[in-house]
Amino acid sequence: MSRRRVVLGLAAERARSLPVLGRNHGSAPARAVMRPRPVAAQPYLGFPATHLLTKPFHSTSTGGNQSHRPFTLTPPTPPSIHPAPSSPALPDQFRTLMRLLPHSVVVCTSTHPASPSSASGAPVPRAMTMSSFTSLALRPTPVVSFNIATPSRTFDAVAASRQFNIHVLADDASGARIADWLAGGNAGAREVFARLAEEGGCEMSMAEGAPVLKGAGVLYVVRCRLLDQPSAGLVRVRDHVIVLGEVVEIVEGPGAQTEVEERFGLVYADRRYRQLGGCLTKGEGVVERDEGEVVDREGEGGT
Image 1 (tube, rainbow, N blue to C red):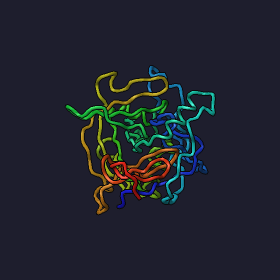
Image 2: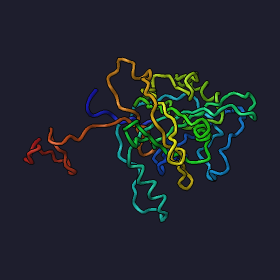
Image 3: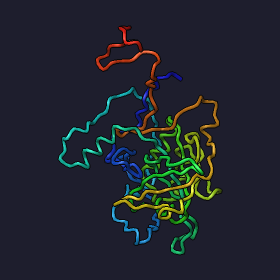
Image 4: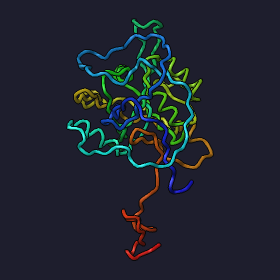
């Protein structure tokens, strides 16, 4: 694979962006505009009222209601937006700024325990695409975090079960397809996963607690449980909750078991899924100036 990899532009501009998760002020995958398909009604498993869930998360009424779409590589393009103060609203300016920063794209899965009010009485699997996943500490055990806008069915499942899985996605069409599918909400619960397997080539297993996705687009699965402290691993900040988890195990996914050379995970910037590009290496090769003039590392003119 060449050092300069072509950017993977996968999504046309969406109706609005998801928060980086859940949302980092507009940098996370946006919802696709799509034709709705009927989805079986599911009871909303609300989080306890003491957590004051006040702001809707991304729509969950469409629950994976998108048809299978091909993804193709497109040439690199400059950012389509700029953080200039074209809008008087500071939140809008900041959201635009955050779109210039690439973020990792992962899928979080969890299971809401069986509820007496549910029709089947069975545990309900949930999943969502997010781009706020990051590490906080390595020792004595790794600690990770992400933030999620509430209310959210996936957050309800994490809070109730106190365990979740993070899926690191491949930076190709197979990984982007999974991310795009689960960015559309999961009101359909098991139906979403069934159709993901049928149309997206990624199956779901419930044998290990929180759902595990198994498909070519999954590089690794990071199994986690909520921290006990601080705040039982859930820290509310305005309309978001910061989730703090302890890594229990890292499992190699199907995407990492192929003969394809080592790859980076899927990233997202300026409302599009992307592959990681070239490297800026200190002290090696040539340096390209803004005006296009190329000089060697000694500062002398070069070609």
